[in-house]
Length: 397
Image (cartoon, rainbow, N blue to C red; front, side, top):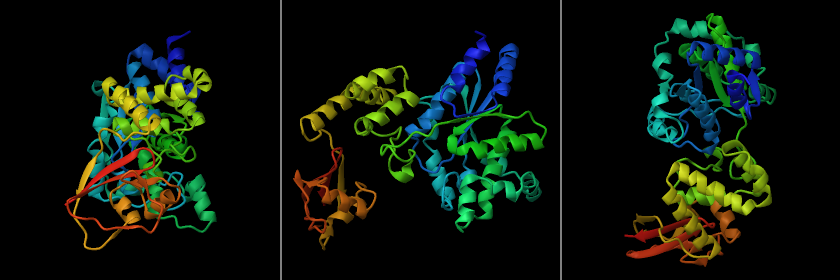
């Protein structure tokens, strides 16, 4: 088998779209013969401060390109984050402030280098070229695409038909993502399946500037822990790369057996899928261990596994529990508000649902009343438990 064919087969594994096979093979063949690495681009908007396992699908593929000697560019969309990617959304995405964007980008480099080789990775920010564009440049950029073609995009089309607002600035997002490819002289761009429109825009903008067109590869969106929607912090169904060892291990163990197989297929060694079908519990533990080991350490993975067995198999309380201190209140506090304010639930509605299902405990006793109000006394302590994995020790000053 030709060397470039072997590279091609590994690169396109799991890819849903490849535009185009022929172009990609030619680029790989030319790169091998000239010993000139290809510029491989993947963009990540700092919508939230933490990367998660959904991002790991692309990071794993970028690592393969690195192993083949190509130049990987991890693009942080600090400029496009000001607009908000409309991909797959039924409404306008809220715009982030400059302060939020800066805060969210701080830990990206630290997180990606858990997977990528730091010496072979370029971290770029699209503000470095977008901030230099003048009014005439923006007009020129907008002239490369029509409103009619933009409205053919699936999410825009649905919103238009349903009479939902589409703001002009949202049209800029795919244009800027396309301009990024031109500015970076990208040979290949990777993204999720929901990004196909934006990725193809890169080819349009490159074509308008007489630049060689990038190849486009899209990969499946990893479902979140709920097994329904794509993994996202917006849906609170994520496993963050920065989750504590215990939290990461516990979240993986909460996956359904079918979803666990999906994680093996996209994130780990796919050859394990057949064995995992026969022994799901064993391989779910193995998946949890391997992920904690990768993002923390072997020792942390061992301790997380032991802690899980102790807490969940033997119904014990964790040995290490996060502690917080709060001030005593004159008035009694509604339990749902308390759980939300302490970050144990995303909303009071979720707190009510958990209480009704018997999923909330105070000092190892189940809370049965959704309207319960606690009088937080000075110099007292409370052990709060939400679900099977969340514990918090609250000290009242």
